[in-house]
Figure 1 (cartoon, rainbow, N blue to C red):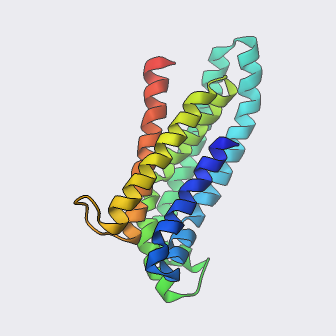
Figure 2: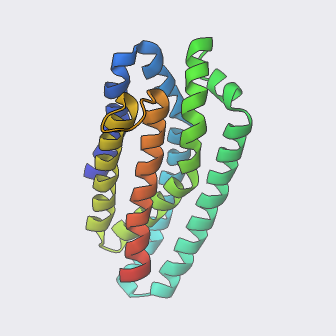
Length: 198
């Protein structure tokens, strides 16, 4: 529950910080994030389904089966994440047009979406790995990676949206870049733990 609340907090912080640029910027960022929400719904379903099996095998001590299920789930996440990324990149204005008819919102949303798209595959992988950790009693790492992600996002939002501490003022593109970097950092925290510790 806390992890979901943290994830929701990232979207709220984007909206709060973009609020000073008007309703169009907020709408563009929110609508530009819709494909990601749809992708994460798929990832949540995949993670939830895998978690049931993984928890059973964890109880039996069968780590080979856990690794196999994790591999299948990661493969599916990478494939779907890649397809969504390619489709959204190739048809960005049309994808934005599914959510609004405002040319101004679409124009800003395209800028946001094109940057955030680069996080789709790694965010899908992070979601699966965090689901595996929760199912194998490693809740702290999944929660910790989310916490590091939101702190990174908030700090970079402030720097990149408003151009603070020597960073360029990027406004909505800064919000997108901050989100991308935060997702990369979150993935790296999980990856380092999986590769080097467990």
